Length: 164
Image (cartoon, rainbow, N blue to C red; front, side):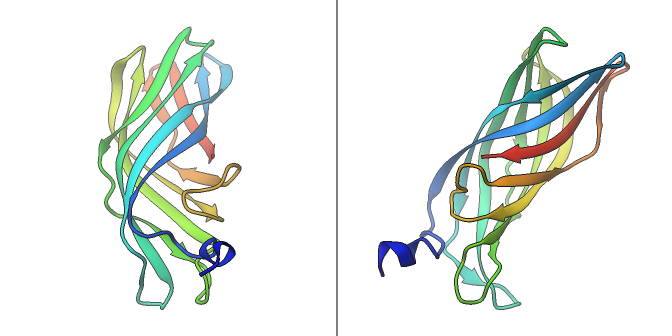
């Protein structure tokens, strides 16, 4: 298989490190700030196999995830970290003849930290999007599904998007 052909297919099972930039909107007492987090994720993948629809897919286990950014509005560091290792995540090919582009879906349970202290836990989120390589290429973007997080009486955090 040529290098060009290899770029069309999922890599063999393995461990991967992904750096990304989740973007959140923070609102406090009517003031707003957009935070771009620096995030690191470690994952383990299976070998590709066909699903019931005949598309090739790889199962993904998220083994670690953390993100942090400094908020000028709050004058402190805001962070997120995984609390439940997501074992029901996957990447599924969009075409029967090759693996890319693919649909990525990462499911996780996480918690929010303010100044290093956990302020909200038991939260769930799903990142979904189209990727063109695995691990995702720079500039691949994902939707992050989740609800507005009410952290305190006067503080809300809304997830917007994630970019590699």
